[in-house]
Image (cartoon, rainbow, N blue to C red; front, side):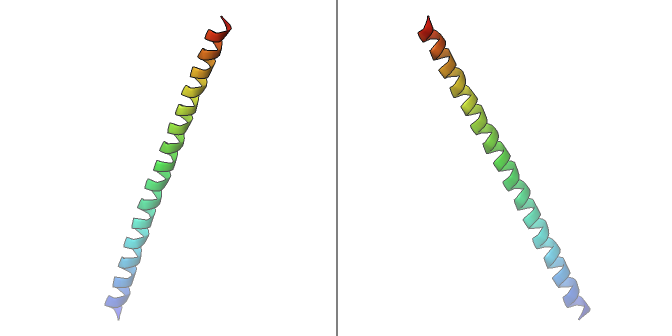
Length: 57
C-alpha cells in the first residue's frame, strides 16, 4: 500500500515537473517570437521612413 502511494506521488511530481518544463519552453518561444515580429515591424517602419525621405527630396 505504501509503495503504491509512493509510486503515485513520484509519478505526479514527474508529470508536474515535465508540464512546468514544457510551459516554460512555450513561454520562452512566445516571447522570442514576439520579439522577432517586433524587430521585423521596426525594420519595415524604418525602411518605409527612409523611402518617404528619399521620395521627398
